[in-house]
Image (tube, rainbow, N blue to C red; front, side, top):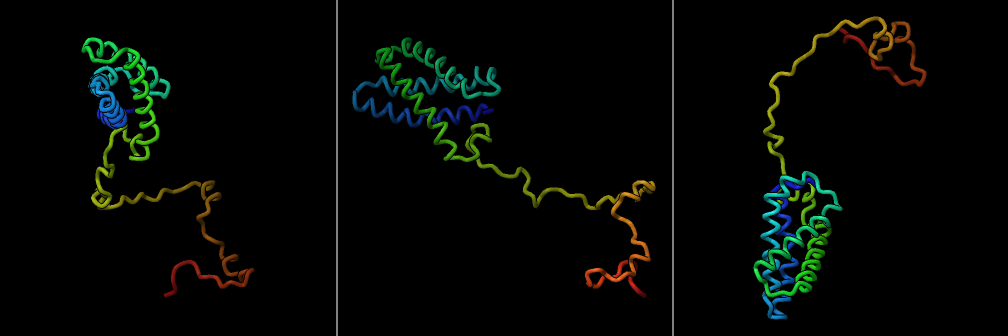
Length: 188
């Protein structure tokens, strides 16, 4: 995939909707706001990486690089959660991150191509595609240029399929019995 910067950000936001709902559910069930805060920090960190580092470093993203980036983002997120003192233990944060990462990856692989068939070809952007100039407004030349007839050599004329039928063959009756349409100039 060759995502554009806008495509990276749009894709990041779209694939984190499921994990955000999962985090909201866990927050409501446990009463611990750390889950929803973790997704918020993960989204902000991911958008910051997409706008700065990934735009400069990644020109083409093979499938195996997704996991490598996931591991790197996990390390950065763990450090940020520790600095921000989010009320989650490290095992809780790690388990929640990897479940969210798998949900996001499955959303990117399965759901997004179904939602937008041209999503991948559009560099990860969700946009309406169409002609930049409608075909009806496409400029066309007013006068077609006619090439001058060039004299061809004898060898080219010999192997060409465009040539006059000799007079003695032209007047023979058709072997199939089909009437021939006269060729040549119309009668006066």
